[in-house]
Image 1: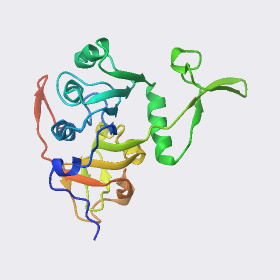
Image 2: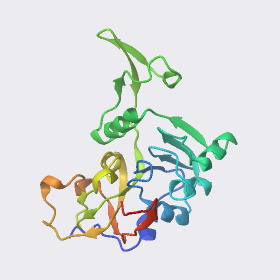
Image 3: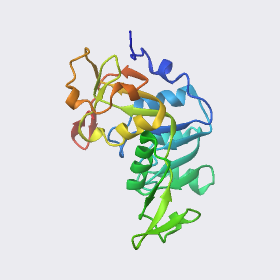
Image 4: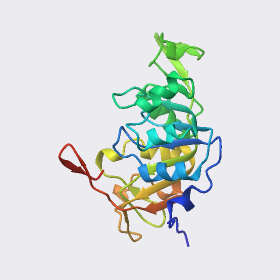
Length: 233
């Protein structure tokens, strides 16, 4: 019987090894798998390459992982924000490596990994420093840059509902990079707020099929006060 439900986050993360490439969902603080990130800090894997849209906010979640010293390199689109002081300090002191990737390229490089595509030509970044060292080509009068897929050893994503086969649905914008990261990784771990019976999820509403998911862990929904509003995403 297929059953991908795992009792604890520690158990789900036990196989993450030093030097792994870890894809972490989230767009800013939306859809951040904070519980899995905290679990990864406790698990202790080091020399990690982390792929995320940005480089952490404040001192929690991804920022806390960076602060722990477990991350060697980060691949992201938006490393600098008003509250990205942890990354800023690490980068300026030479303690972390950065690969800056335009957001659309980041999504497509992840999608290419999941689709088995060996590379693609994209006009974004042509003529800029981001194209240095990369193959370029003129196609039908336009200039393109060769981009390669981003494969992950592990993907950590936050979903809304799941079943024991690993089928996932997401909550609004919390979906963001989760689906493409799940397809791009060898091993995908997802947190869900609700585990439902097989057949309860409308197949047309399933965003990430269970074939791309290795383990799911149920977590409580915690409301936090921010700016006078309660947020649960």
